[in-house]
Image (cartoon, rainbow, N blue to C red; front, side, top):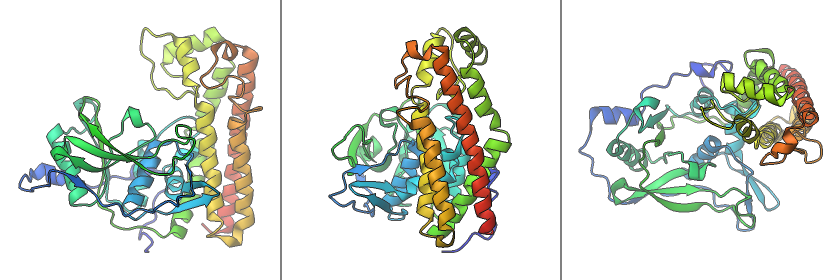
Length: 402
């Protein structure tokens, strides 16, 4: 595998400006002379998970699941790692790191970071198309069908239609009735099927084109890095993202989150009414005529789980990297241990961020100032742990001359 000729600017993922993808070019030229089959299922070239493996995940991030499933389906994934009857998709871990998602200071998602992931992974582009013109580039139902057919039948790649009913991610691997019915593949979250969620589910999806429909298409994969190169890029990415989060423009997210929790209940409500944002919460701008306190409580339902899982995958990436950099195995083990500790600040059932308030949040408990003060202390410790983690990764990369 070849190394890119030009080093990618890790600190500015937004600098990635994808060229016009194959799909858009074809639609602009209105090539209507292609006769696609009425029904089509893209052959699955993916890895068959052993029958004795029963659990897939945990893996909650939709875009990372979609990326990992798409790569595996076309036989170009980075493989699975097995621990007893559990398996983790290496591609998911890589997606969580290269996108920057696993290093975020609060429940954020950077579209530029996701674009960066697809770019580093060798795809010519990643574009979104919408049924709603207010959201961006628009496609009618017939245009989306044509784009899906071309991706499956000509590019031989799945495509993605995110949907709330499968918030953990799915990919389109085929269609029926000339595209009126899509064929989706997805995995059930382990907590939905505790017995066995390691086998992919294939389902039909009819009446899929609606006012909120979004189509995500990757251009043809033009190259791929070797795993050792991917792990080098990932270690650099961990450093660059934590630099922004700890020393740069995103540092305020930690501070805003901690300060917010130390406010009185009335002051919290007043601030959210004024700004429309819940610091540390997983919801965007707040609309009018809603119960603000209920929104604040609800927005913290999954914060602890979300942040714990993000740092878990920083830990997981460092653990996986040991195989490729045995000369710094002790340093990577120290990072593994450190981010496991960072994970527990949020996720511990005994004294973690959400250990008292629960999921869903118990408003009566969350209302207690002493409980929120303890949670604010967790945020402070979390920030300090990320600061220490940045110092450790900087020292490691200096020793590796990266």
